Amino acid sequence: LLSALTLARRAATLPGPLHPEAVDAISFDSGFASPGIFPDLTRAAERALTTYRREALQYCLPFGLAALREWIAAYMRDDGVDVDVEDVMIVNGAKNGLDLICRLFAEEGDAVVVTAPMYFTAIPILRSFGLSFIEIPQDREGLDVKQLELRLQQRERDGLPPPKFIYDVTDFHNPTGITMSLDRRQALLRLAGDRSIPIVEDSPYRKLRFEGEAVPSLKALDRNGMVFAVGTFSKLIAPGLRIGWIGADRSMLRRIAQLKSDGGTCPLTQRIVLEFFKDDGLTQQLVRARTAYAAHRDHMVAALRRELPDVAFSAPHGGYYLWLKLPDGIDSGVLAHRAFEMGVSVIPGDAFFASNEPGSARSKGVPKHHLRLAYSYSTEQEIDEGVNRLSKAYHSLLS
Ligand SMILES: Cc1ncc(COP(=O)(O)O)c(C=O)c1O
Image 1 (cartoon, protein in one colour):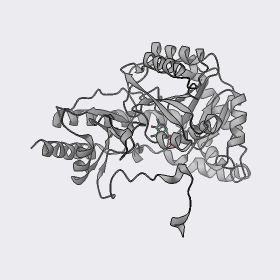
Image 2: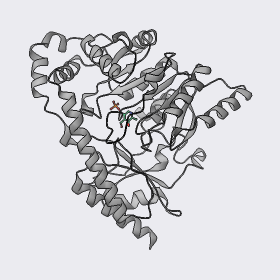
Image 3: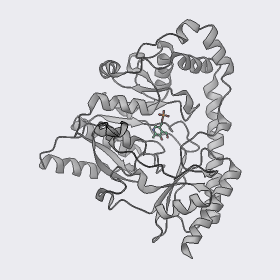
Image 4: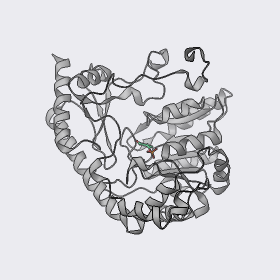
């Protein structure tokens, strides 16, 4: 009976798993956090369930707990953003924030600007709204704004409407690790402002900088209220909390509040996070996370240079990922498959291109010579062992 049901178009395609079955592989694939950095939230949870019991176990209003919104507004102000509590809404993680922004703007058939490659979990979210993609490459300074301008001009000449928004990960981009330069940020804001195109700035790794100076966020540079800043505690505290936020003009947030269908983000978790902050938990947590991930990065970089000198990459100054360029003639899908057989899972780069639809003609032209490696989750020992297995897989393809 179930097979006779007519599903919505958005549910009709079911991508296969990246790997056929989970075995005991070392995982360089997903952006899981290192369990070693999870803080002890026991005291915070106890206070949430005793002192704040009535609030924590009740429905929460769509905007979230006022105290947490205040805290996030102050956190954003410290980062140069001119924001007030009214301009902050709590959501169930950054992905939920993106989903809500799509609900606000997207009609079936609209277009959205993304980078090529892009954060691959955002692809099915955007697709589920029937959005089509305007894919713009990046160079070392980030999204190529000149190319974007040319593409927008071409759309105008073709009589096509402008895109509904521009989606980008401006700091330690997933998967490329690139941080957009200040000049590029200003150019992007000028272009978007001239054409009244909102920008969704998804920046979960911003505070995970291991070295160098932070560049002001698009949201901090924005003078027109066109930037929707999507934030999350997933990469700083723990992804299982599912607490994120949208920082945007209050007039937009009021509309989004009407579209929120979750009965409010869990107030218990919001309160646990707040109680954790009261003990100055985040300051220590950031040190812990940066120290751990910088060490993981250094370890993986050293192992790759030692074992796979033919593979090109630049070490990012923060975030979770390395974006590898394989030598000519090596297909990343074949290598990922062989690596998995040898006990290490990695994601072939074509999965990060919105135009990649496995089995479809549209996938032609998608580059097949990149791999994304996450150094976040594995221990240093696993990193050594995993890179060794990857190297064996690579060399087996050469012979
Ligand atoms: C660019 C980007 N946005 C969002 C997320 C997920 O954030 P959340 O767990 O808050 O949904 C990730 C996690 O990998 C990410 O890399």
